[in-house]
View (tube, rainbow, N blue to C red):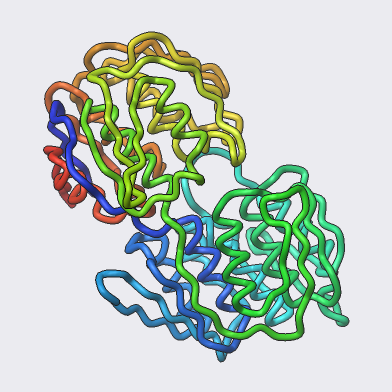
Length: 424
């Protein structure tokens, strides 16, 4: 298991380019299964989740090629021959986003088979909404122990109204993709509104889909008999941008973020300004993050987009541990997002948690020690951020989940002046 060794006390300074979004590229890769033609996805991050998705796609018969074009990674996918409707169980367990292949495979092949997907240990993440959407589209669900098979009826998938109980990103994406090849019109009510949904819809439209209404109360998809190839660029990763912004803030540094979309980060930027961090938009579109030596405390509540993202809550929690004052943080999305709190306490943080609520009394100084990431991508990143602030040495054990969402996290922090090393 890899570990990160962090020597705290160095304010971060410099400029860093933000990669393409993890949560946008994975559904786009899945969408390539909808067509026999070649698809090209541009600005693909070199992260573990992408590599796992490549392995899954190749296993089911998709031709996948990776090319470096002027320092930008392009992914070429051609699903001319799909040889199986079953996603390998061992790969499915590695990554929750593998469930996004079910909609495209069901639409293209008429069936799809999977085990329960894996991912971060942040609480219950049932796929019932995904399956209910498929049922609405005229598919039936068969369960065999830990295996689930989704089968279209003899007349195929049929357009319908799908009402989501909660604006789930994955369920919205799966319903959208399955509906592109269904007969008739599908309306998805109460869909997720994240920018990654817009990016997927853009890709599907370039493939020939008829989709409108993303970002509103209802997404409408008019089914087509066949889709073609397309080229599309992945949007910047707003979660990665937020993580590096917090890294600058927690160390009292100044960092410029290149390749960002500020309109996707309004709630985050607003909260950072509230705690005393200056965020300035430069002429080239980059963001300059300037932090005081110690941010102010401020309460936080996570919400579906356009609210404050749950994927940045742990990073904010790390910053609150060293803030001036007391913060009350409410997590409304995942019930186990505060598992990392006990590790912060080991570093001298004053945190009291109860269910989905955390009360954090900031301390001037955290102390370096040995902590464990507990199979959580964002929790691992937040412990590294806390180590950047702490006095002495912090050893973050079991931090390999950070590779799922951040490309060369330690190396890029080093370029900003952090004293950090990775030991595998």
